[in-house]
Amino acid sequence: MEPQAEKPGEADGARVTPQLLKSRSGEFALESILLLKLRGLGLVDLGCLGECLALEWLDLSGNALTQLGPLASLRRLVVLNVSDNRLTGLEPLAACENLQSLNAAGNLLATPGQLQCLAGLRGLECLRLQDPLARLGNPLCASPSYSTLVRELLPGLKVIDGERVTGRGSEFYQLCRDLDSSLRPGSSPGPRAAEAQPWVEPGYWESWPPRSSSILEEACRQFRDTLQECHELDRQAGDILARAEQALGPAGAASSFVF
Image 1 (tube, helix red, strand yellow):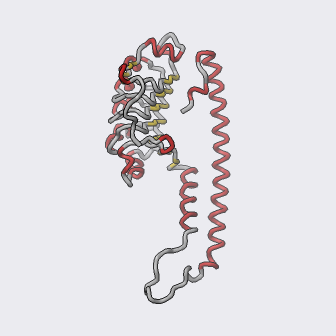
Image 2 (image 1 turned 30 degrees about the vertical axis):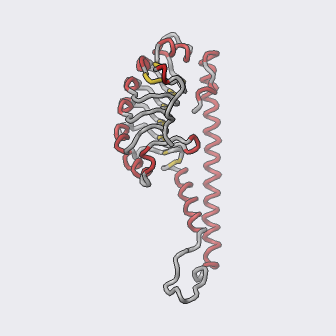
Image 3 (image 1 turned 120 degrees about the horizontal axis):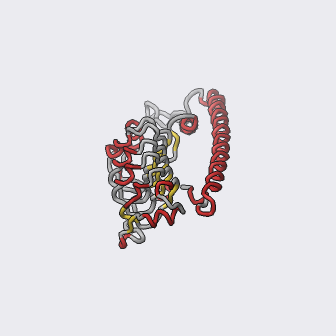
């Protein structure tokens, strides 16, 4: 799950220019741009992107970027997608003090230490470093202790790689794992291999149904609560997108600003 070896337009050495930014955003002044989608343009140089001081949402996925220097001036940036590039470091993002969501899957980040620069971002809640569905990852994701190390380094994260690690959603994930474990009979052999042993432990049938039922009921309850929360978030997102579409007018389609 590594970045693609070659990206369209890479040979041209595409870079961000004022003309490109104005044509993609429909804005006359760079300082007025709030939302920007520069996906899959073969960019190798961010050029004047740092002049978009009001930028809050930025998609740079599917390019050939190796560094993010100009992003250091984007203090208002909230959502950033730099997946499927060639980044070996994220240091400039340490200055993006309002960053809440970062997708850096499909790059060349090799050690958890390369995430240390994000430790000062108190608002950072969502981080994605691998995306199995898109077959994108980073070398550091190959470590068995990868998730634990990231959580220790960035304790403020609520979502890692799309899985909630704190809050109600995380409890549901843990409950499902507990349920799987409780449904799996003990597999350890008896103390004497020569002697026939029951295939379940004594009292298995008496204690199993109430314990399983209790866990299952709690799992169902939390699933319903989480589903309801998702419906509410979807409704809120729909309202926000509708307002954004109205504000942007013909120059911007709200549906194009979805990761």
